[in-house]
Image (cartoon, rainbow, N blue to C red; front, side, top):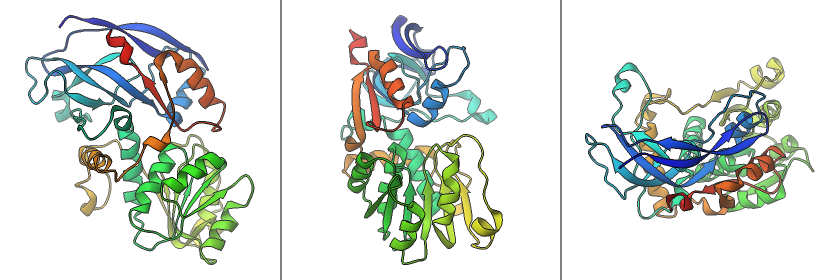
Length: 343
């Protein structure tokens, strides 16, 4: 199949978005070409890039779903018409390497997972963020009956709440500044919610846990300054797990907030073939996580439809990024639709 010209979203300076065109060639022998149907904006990392002062043209996005329209001659296991997920930018079509020889040199690579018939294209766009959330909950290791608090109820925070709910913690407390997100958190499995704009989140978590603090606390915000509150809300001997990518630095009180309580602070960054975790978790590679997430979605064990606040044509990308940059009010998951680019 010959090369195709498709639209794409690009950042062209601080707070500026353009819709331009890119030519996607026919696939190399080890590639497939995928025609995009839907893509999900990852508000945290993409907002950081959107607000960057650089004037260099950048292509945002990494959560794309589409249909295979051309297959390289050496590719096995894929055919035209397959639906697949790919870590690809917001554009109408893209090439995906199925068999990458650079893996032997330590390059991270995962063949694109096929999307099962039981999962919609919109649901499938959440695969990367669900993978991040699942890995974070596994690293936090809540046990049955533990008290758990989740600071931040954006999309990843909602998914962390859902995965944490699977071990039946009590209480499972969701904290945010937005009432609409806290209402969604109830649907995601939270037993209690706290609006931190109206009450002291730390005091309320301690009250809900009968003066102890939560045994496991997840920090899922892009604001580093929340970390001290997470630590103060954690029970002695408990764990604080950072899930997401908060930029910048933060000061903590080593004696009062860390040492005397003997806390464990765990970072997560799910980008490796084999997670840097305990031996018993090493089977949960990214491909294994994603297969499990698809299986959960397919049997309604993981819900994401309630997290979609905006499902719009890609031509509205500028408005969507401006909305996201304006703060968390009025939106959660934003899905871009690319279906008319195949016409």
